[in-house]
Image (cartoon, rainbow over all chains, first blue to last red; front, side):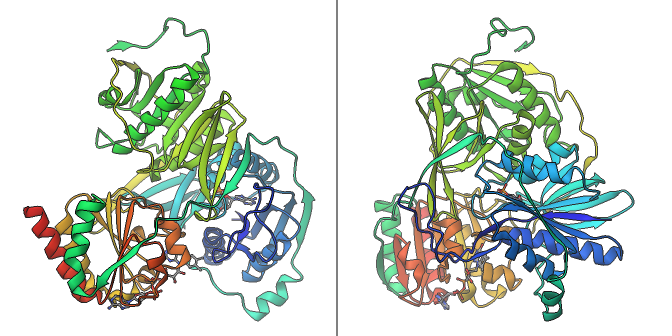
Length: 249
Length: 336
Ligand SMILES: Cc1cc2nc3c(=O)[nH]c(=O)nc-3n(C[C@H](O)[C@H](O)[C@H](O)COP(=O)(O)OP(=O)(O)OC[C@H]3O[C@@H](n4cnc5c(N)ncnc54)[C@H](O)[C@@H]3O)c2cc1C
Ligand SMILES: Nc1ncnc2c1ncn2[C@@H]1O[C@H](COP(=O)(O)O)[C@@H](O)[C@H]1O
């Protein structure tokens, strides 16, 4: 079975975010980019499923600026077979992104299309189920573990209070969260091989966004905190403050 | 209760009404649904419309207290063995047929599973996990955290209806009693194939999910090992049923606690009224998951730990000495 994995290039979680003078974008200089961490879980899941089956290929698909090439190469170095870059600037509109990705995926023969549960820049948690709808496939979200059976895939989902088990008919879509699939590291050989793997680029279809980002702001600083004291002697005072000043106990 | 069929005035699509989608658990409406109804009310009033509530199953009457004018009970199907799609399909059909200015979901884990499915059926984006929502010049404008809370984006909905989900515990519910009508609607018009819920395993111990608790007791690597978690569990028990345990990623990666308890960028986002960070350093990815908490208390033996930079109250010292004393003091307080 072939598997497609949708991956997004996002600022590294450690990166300091600086808002540009126009108040609508972030300053790009000095921002290190990575594959969104949840997309790495999705890629790892795809690699393990294909390795277990002994057949099939993993295709990476990303919609992003030209620099996304590097991110795709890093995914190829981990073991993906080929990559497709849909050049353009993705917006916060998940429905627009979903349409761009689905247009490419509808021609694919992938039995599974995998996503991260969320991209850690915009944190919209929506592109996966939206693409599923456009492709007319069932979709399980927040998946921690998958097993492919005869025409079906059984997924474990992280839900409030436990794990839900869902069986879907193939072809299907899933969004991955942390669970069984700890991302592997690239080997030197993987990095060398990645250079020769196919990376196809095309311009993304133009779509009208259904929302507009009007401005970015820094979150209000938290009110100045205070050290109540040192050691066990401070406990009584802390509890008093929580009770009388903060009124939360 | 009457059957909602041919309603008076149903032919005219009023884009001024706002629909809140309520969530139920074992037949009881979740607390966050009141917050969703309050937000719906605050949008419907300036738009000049009324507030409708959609609920799956026979629940939700009490939402009239929080500002609902009409309550629609959808037939069985939602959240059942067919997963979220049957309810999503029924909702989308209703929203499409009736016309709404906005639809408000709760950004809980089930709300985040449901809302994008409704959005895709309506062909609009979802404004997810909002911390504020208002009407500006007739349009819905929201604020939502981006880049793991390092920035807040002000976003205007251009497509109609505006679909949004609200972050729990941020926008307080307000009483606004109404005489609401309760109407039954048929279930899903289609039963989407290919998705079957075949099992559920409750996670060990956790009665209350960390993202739903109003007080969270989180432990970090400084707790040294899983054998020391009874100390934190005892503090949680001293506080009571509204409290849940959380953990840093270092703790989860070490296998001391399940991932369901992880707070942070690759775990849960929590907004309790009180958050205890015990022996947690306060890495940026941890802060991403808890910095919008009401009050933050840090206990750390390193006075320079970054967690003190966001904490409202801190104690510098050894968690192994402080936590038992804290549990004792809370119990004393409870006894009055
Ligand atoms: C992509 C990515 C995603 C991540 N996502 C998350 C996430 O979702 N959540 C998350 O938490 N982290 C996340 N991290 C990890 C994060 O960077 C930190 O490594 C992690 O939060 C550290 O956990 P900690 O504070 O428990 O441990 P440490 O940083 O080791 O801190 C332990 C603290 O305990 C204190 N201490 C030690 N002994 C005692 C004692 N006896 N009494 C009192 N204090 C004591 C120490 O002073 C120290 O401050 C992520 C990292 C990356 C790269
Ligand atoms: N521009 C993009 N290109 C490829 N995949 C994307 C893109 N944006 C989002 N995705 C995928 O959709 C998931 C959820 O993203 P989001 O809905 O934005 O939180 C991500 O984890 C990716 O798998």
